Image (cartoon, rainbow, N blue to C red; front, side, top):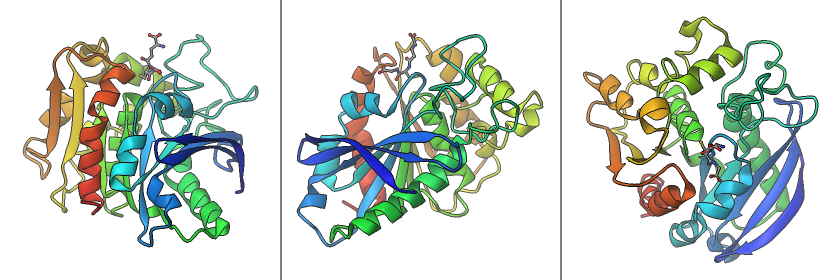
Length: 299
Ligand SMILES: N[C@@H](CCC(=O)N[C@@H](CS)C(=O)NCC(=O)O)C(=O)O
């Protein structure tokens, strides 16, 4: 479970660590970046909460580290940010037979695959929500730093597009365990059934029986998972996003929430003229940072 350091860069008031480690879940080396805010280095005594940011299709941990501008927000409120990879990688890992960018490498969809040949390595749900946080916890405990990072308890989750799907899906699936204290998403895909990205990915990873997709489908989960904490889910969606109407459709989550304990609690902010890129994400990161900082008890 030990991490190798691939790089460490000064960024804003803290440092971005580029790490890799052997994953038992994916049976590959996995890359992960983590931003440690200025509070980590000034050795504050209270525990530093962690926000997990799940990236979208085609991304590695670098895209959001370089272009989302979480770092100034992390310094402002005093949280760390973990940027996991989007799939297992390596010559042995099966990829999309059609060579597309919406399935296979960089497109793990944060599920545990049940179908051959993907089920051996594509275990991104168990990796991101269980193995990785425990591994980071152990690694930083061994460092013996007096600043304590909280990878396991006071934590939040967010993500973009495929990663927004992964964030909301996990938040709802793990709600009874109160795993994530806070959830938000940028342009998330909210229901795999009926959209081309979802049909391809879920068909490939989980098989053709769509009842098995429901376990991960936010629009289905919202109807069975109780909102016992008066939680809100914050979503931003650009109206000029080319994927908005065909692949993402965040309003479907609001519609599915009608008549449930989540009714009125899915805050979809449509933002005029914004696209799907990191220009959009970085513009609204401050709003998401403030939302999570409140839910994590930082303000
Ligand atoms: N590669 C696709 C675009 C895929 C895409 O927009 N991916 C988003 C996430 S769904 C992303 O974050 N791309 C990487 C980046 O913008 O840095 C294309 O060429 O049209």
